Image 1: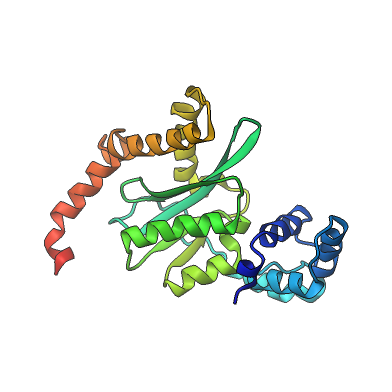
Image 2: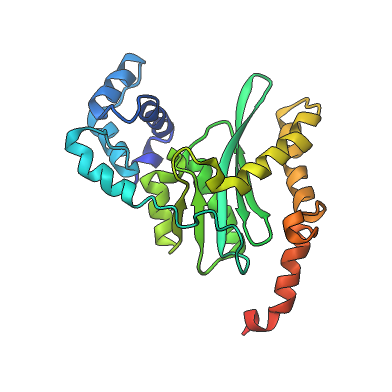
Amino acid sequence: MLLEFRYPNMTPIIEQLYHDNQQIFGPGKIQAILKDRGYAISQKTVADIMHQNGWFSIRPSSKKMYLQAEERKRNILNQQFQVSQPNEVWVSDVTYFRYNNKMYYICVILDLYARKVVAHRISDKNSTQLSKGTFKKAFESRQPTRLLFHSDRGANYTAKTFMTYLKNLDVKQSFSNPGVPYDNSVMESFFKSLKSEKLYRTELHSTREFQKAVDDYICFYNSKRPHYVLSNRTPDAYEAVFFSKHKDSLNS
C-alpha cells in the first residue's frame, strides 16, 4: 500500500518542507523539523514517502540520481503550439487566487488543438493530488490514445507518483525550461484571461461563489468566447468541425 494513502496529511507537508529548503534536506532533517512541530512520524516513514515521490536530497551522494531525473525532463513541445488534431497535446499549469484571506489553487488542462479547457479542479493545497486528480478527470473524459502532456517543472508535475501514473497510461511528458514562461504561454494566456475577464471583475461573497465563477468562465470560454487563433471560432465550435470532418475515420 502506498504510504501517501496511509499518511494523506503528511505527504503534502513533507513535500512543502522539501521544496521550501531548496531540495537540500534529506529524511533525517525533515523528520527532525516535523518532530519539533509535534508530528509523530519516524525517519524511515519520511524516507519512504520521499523515495516514492522522487524527493531526493541534492547532495554529492544523490547527484547521479538527480542528474538522471533532470535528463528525463525534456522540453519536447518546444513552443510548437499548433497541432493537427484534438487529444494530441495537452498543456497544464496551476495558478492561485486569494479570496477572503485564503489562497486557492486552480489546476487547468487545456487541449492545444482548439485551445479548449478539458478539465479543471480547485483546491486549497497546491499538491500532486490536485494535478493528478485534474489529469484523471480529463483522461477519463477524453480517452486519448497518443498524448503529449506539457507543464512546467513544478513539484506537482515532477513527483514520482505523478510521472509514474502518466507513464503507466503511455502518456509522454514534456517540461518547460526553467525560467522560461513562454514555453507554456498558452496556459499563461488563459489564466490572464480568467482573472482579468472574470475573477477580478466579480464581487464574491463565498467560496462557493468563487468556485462557480471559475466554472462559469470556463463554460463561457469553451462555448461562447471566440479565439483569434481559431479564426474567431470558439473552442467547442472549432473542435466540432474537426470531429464532423473525421467522424467516419474515427468510427472505423
